[in-house]
Image (tube, rainbow, N blue to C red):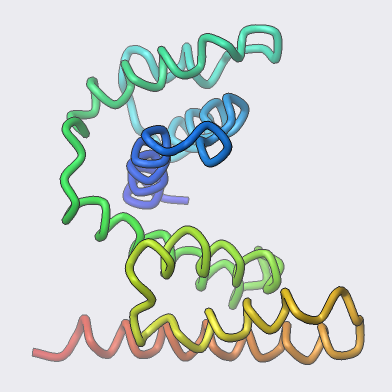
Amino acid sequence: MDAVVAISLIRMAAADLTMGPWQRPSDAYLVQLGLDALMADIETPSLPLLAGLARGEYPQARELFDLVLEELGLLPLASEDLANARWTAARWWAGQIVSGQLDPVHGAKLIYQESAAELEYPDALQPIVDLARALDLLNDQPPVQQHIRDQVTSAARGFLATETHQNHSF
């Protein structure tokens, strides 16, 4: 993970903190974001404190996460920045699927729930969204699920190819 992806995931978590209690990121997830950011060479005074919280200290995570947001200059959250963060995360998850670093089922669900749904289901992500929805209907039928895993990997590859082409054509 690079710094751009880490910042994007932090932005998305910050937006999710404003949602209902059942939709908010867990304290453990906030600590993991801190660890990921440190590994991506992001530096703020509070980041090591967040990343270093022990399980019994997790109740401090939200307060430290808020400090990290301020130190990174991510507040207030702008809708355009958040949309860019969701696109960045979708590209990163797609790349992780294609490289075999992320299970295609899990990756498709992340792209569907964390990016596409919040971006109002853009056409570029629709093939992955359709496959994620199909996976929900399968109820873990292994032979069919493996076929869809392959399709998700192919759709992620197609999405990345389209994104690369769009980003390099003027």
